Image 1 (cartoon, rainbow, N blue to C red):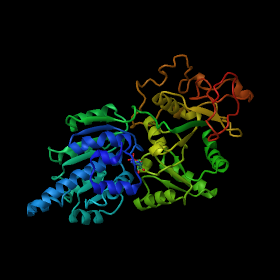
Image 2: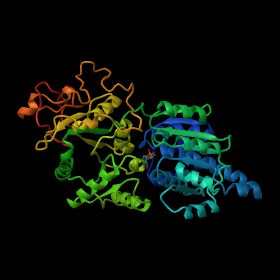
Image 3: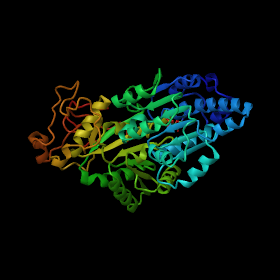
Image 4: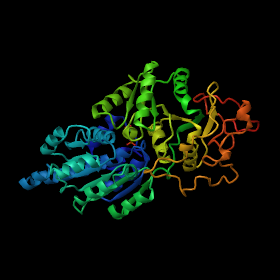
Length: 475
Ligand code: AMP
């Protein structure tokens, strides 16, 4: 299929051509006709599938058509309509807000449609000025939009299209009440589009209350990790991770690596350490000013930085074509975050590599991730960095409160379809290793710290396994 077959206007086709796109991605081919027809849409699509253009292009087309109709009538009342936004895109993060608005500008270059991204962490004044001048498409994070609503600096009464982008993520970040408050401010008659990487129960519930007779478009199976991403695990002690990461930078000559940490503090410390070791790095997290975040991202995209050390939320909106390498310095507590993380690479058809450094304290997170992926991730030990820790630290058994676990069923000791797999309790007597550990005999690489041995990482992208059992799966 070609873009020309989708019924898009010449202005849009010209802008798409300038972006270098020739054929629509599956989500675009499926979603654009529905959105153009004015229907509500429920779309299951991960980041990297081209979902932004899937809603921005038909939205631009509909708004341009509506403007032309009202301009022809040209009455003062209709001109007033144009100052208030006619479309609202709600997104979970500042970076995503900026990225979506960049797409609106790029694709809408020849349409005259005006857009604005509003988000926190930056001065509200430029946003006020642009809102006063008039905006057609408003892209907003919920918190800053509510600020504008309470100060009566935004008029949502003319919104004809609502788009909830990365709806699952908005739940994870606790925005659901804000979203509901915002929706109350919108006219009842409107088109609604919802995009989500997963359809967890709460996302479905929101879909039921917001969407009317939606078309359903699905381009990825539920919770499927980007299939082009080669994933592997290196088992290592927590204390050794920094050295292992430096070693990997050295041996692989990495030049653009997105590294994930769980905490802001951890991200700062790691970026500093990498920088001190000659690997130009910056941290990206919510405590950084918007300017610092934008600069770090720009430097990373342009190749000035070899590593960007990010927390999950900060990294959410990162869009870099052909990012080759993602490293999970620590595994996330929420398994779906792993999917989002590895989705940073392997975008729009490119192949990517996701490597996770996993300590014994993260065995539960690894097992939950593998359960979500419905497969084991190949795991190995890096010679010279063999893990010495034989027992998990007791505090590692539970993820922190307040975030949902994505593991279905909640029984962390059961593994569907793997009944014979020995499972280890969180801190019970069996959670230590075998006598081999104490004798220093070579150990196989095991996935999940409790299962059967698995092979080495594919290709030369990960570490070489220290040893294998006979009969072990090799590539
Ligand atoms: P998204 O899923 O919207 O974050 O898009 C992921 C990446 O795919 C972005 O870098 C887009 O520029 C790119 N992209 C979107 N649509 C197409 C297309 N039809 N052909 C090639 N690349 C595209």
